[in-house]
Length: 357
Image 1 (cartoon, rainbow, N blue to C red):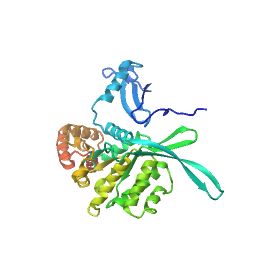
Image 2 (image 1 turned 90 degrees about the vertical axis):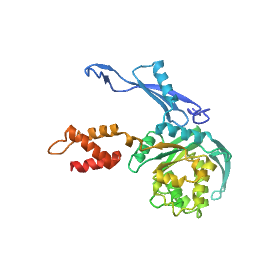
Image 3 (image 1 turned 45 degrees about the vertical axis):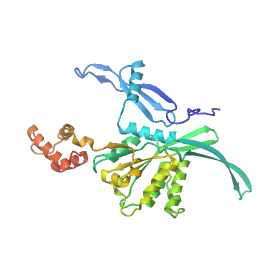
Image 4 (image 1 turned 60 degrees about the vertical axis):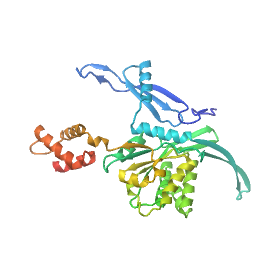
């Protein structure tokens, strides 16, 4: 009987990586002569064994080649600023600051007068250690922040079941995305964290959400319960989406300090997504600003007029007008739409739809 898995002797994220290659089930043709097939692309991938996260990817035509693996390693070493690589650093730094503790708890079952032993497993950080790396994805409303977040986590397993031995099951939640409610306070935010844990575990009825709302009366009790759940499920990172919806006027200063106190105690990575204005309110104080993490400008693409013209040219492929728009008209239309939308893709598509109607 096998009594170990691929995590045997793996201490945590970044301790062991595995690389492999696979031939894609697609053929590439020559750009000069599309009747000529030049081969099938080979995908080389490097995976972190502990977290199952993809650390580097390389695509080439070299099958079983040192060159393909070398390119994959070069991609790993580049100073990439994409959200995927930043998030990987965030999750890794969070787990590296924590250690797994295992102990037995005597649980007396009075109904059958029988004593059983229950094993408790938690990941805890040291309060004296520094906080982990975080990120702040900020930009205009409608620029695609939430869409980018969805695409990021669609490729990452949210729940991982570990079996160090046949009698032990460890549930690890790698990430939670909490979408802030309109005019919400921090009590609502903690309730949503419990709801996100229930959703991650696939519970049809609220369990941990009720544990936070019903059994914890004060805000301090809710914070401690959230800390307990973070340690229980080894949660890697929590991302607060749409932070501009938080009611900053109704929340006291110590409420923000309590949120960062959770980070200090558990060493979980707390990242935010929203507008610049909400970010300044949330991390306006100097002692909070140092926790803001790496800044990612989600609206950077809006200043690229050439990219905007390319998007419009793609949209102009589908026209439902009596007289199609000419190239000369397209340039004037592009200038007008760019001025109206500010380069935001969502607004461009919305306006183009109404033009066609």
